[in-house]
Image (tube, rainbow over the protein chains, first blue to last red):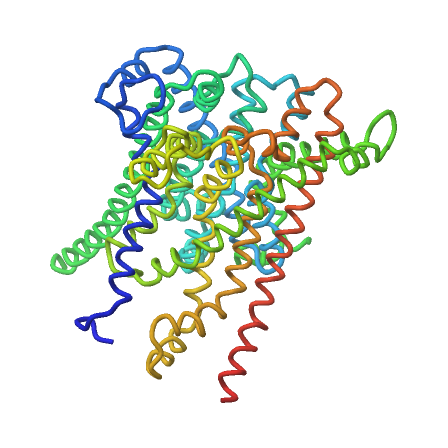
Length: 284
Length: 297
């Protein structure tokens, strides 16, 4: 079955590849096309193109305010998840066997629990504390939901960390905190950034908890889009969706570029050290 | 447990409890995850005293039983659809694995439903499936039917977008399962003259089946907890567990029933996850069975 011989499976495979890609990308493309449609209601294919809905989205306060609220919530909750998740990840990575498995499951449990269950429970808790419609409340809720992302990514990046670096530092007398700040944290920076981006993304896209907790005072973008769906469907929702998508793509691309540049920096640092050693040798 | 004074510099043999930095985080986490769940449990069992009345109600009242059956029906359809789609898609991933740009792009493309806002995707599916939408437009243009079909606000409108949203999980898990098959088995089969289809049927499919089934179980568990898609794109017959929980939460005395329903959902999903873990363990005996079969020949 050489590559040059006619292989009926090959053409079938390419056709299937293209249709699979179309199936997955299709809805996103259609959302993009709909943002340019002139009419109020859905019509496909759109008759002409107009940027009216973009102007609508970016000028109306009723859309821009929720957008910034969502962004703020996303960043704060991702930071919260970082603060809680990174020590947890360190703890997990220093444990072994059954303890490690139990801890890992424990800290990844928000992914395993149905969101509705968590939303109900947190609603009960917050109604006792009178925190239901508050910014702090939704940040805490999204923070808890974002912890698994941080923990999973950090544990895996710590896993690939050379143990000898830590042992050498400890040998030289470093305390736990020093090791944490000077060795472990810098080396898993990439993992932290990736985890942060994922946690923030999941917070922006989160709908169920927002629906349970937010009513009037806090209006994230998800809530506004949901209401738009229920009460007045116009393509501004699509614009909001594209806005979030573009934001997410920027974050992911930044993430990848940062990851690459951080890797490059490490190599450069190594080269620089060699240089000074050579210079030292030349001097003596 | 008191080994914190001994071997302090030796790394992992230190007592875990002496790592003070974990305590604030752990406390926070237990506070905002453990207490909500405890509260739900309490609400479901409490009505001026410990009672099972709410649980009895959710199993006897026709409304709740119907909602439960709806949820199971929709989740089953979604699971079957995802299972059917998972093999072709993950075979694509397997085939183009390691070929540079295309393989990386494929990963991202198959993960799009996880990255993009679900409301945006549902908006797009609404546009595709509605009476004046893409599919009906194409059907009428090509001439297959004269009148548009009703695809949304019924089961079709719920199941298809849910399949779309959940297929990445299915693909990723099936892909992992296929990758873990020993390459030599496939090469041996190809060497012996089997074509691709035969290799798939006799080697790849049987050996990856436990992994694919555990993926299906996860998809089922996730689909049971779905709220947004059935709420926006479904009709009355597609009222799902999550929707009725939210609805009862808005009613003044509905907290008890909502909690009972929530605990029930939690219980079902947990059982499903344990089932999945058991299936993954079963994978080892399954593989050994097949390899004994090959060895004996």
